[in-house]
Amino acid sequence: MTQHASRSQGHRGRNAASLGRLTERNVEAIVALDQAARAGTSFSQRLARRIATFCGSMPFIWLHAFAFAAWITLNVWPGADHPDPYPFIFLTLMVSLEAIFLSTLVLISQNDDARVAERRNALDLQINLLSEQEKHQDAAAAGGHRTQARHPRRR
Image 1: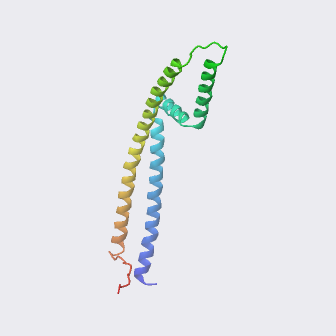
Image 2 (image 1 turned 135 degrees about the vertical axis):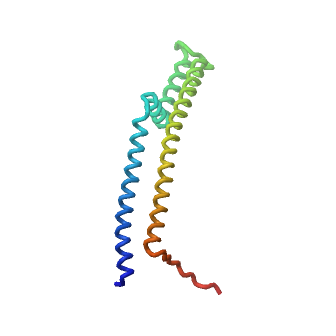
Image 3 (image 1 turned 30 degrees about the vertical axis):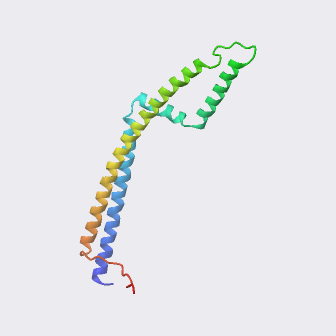
């Protein structure tokens, strides 16, 4: 083994360890970011997220399908008391109010997601910059030699 190859392998070992530490720090930073994002939310924000999550599920759809069917059946059944007869104005009012609140809760949830995504993007940028710095250090430590792939000549 040549002296240059020996130095190069020793450098790769140090860089692998350095890269491992760098990766470990980055993972820890992402975990800390997620924990900080969860810890920094108020009760109302956590409640809004839970409601928005439930509203985006199939049980929510089935619950509404059942409730609407029951309401309409109750109000059109012959011989039954009709508290909200056709055209179901009270039902329309309730659905409209629900839509207003649900859309607001979804917007709150999306705003929180956007804040977390912005923090993650900043962290990604830092990780990418550190990775670039690591590559340049590797190139400089290897003597600045770069290998280029050989391409066959076209005829």
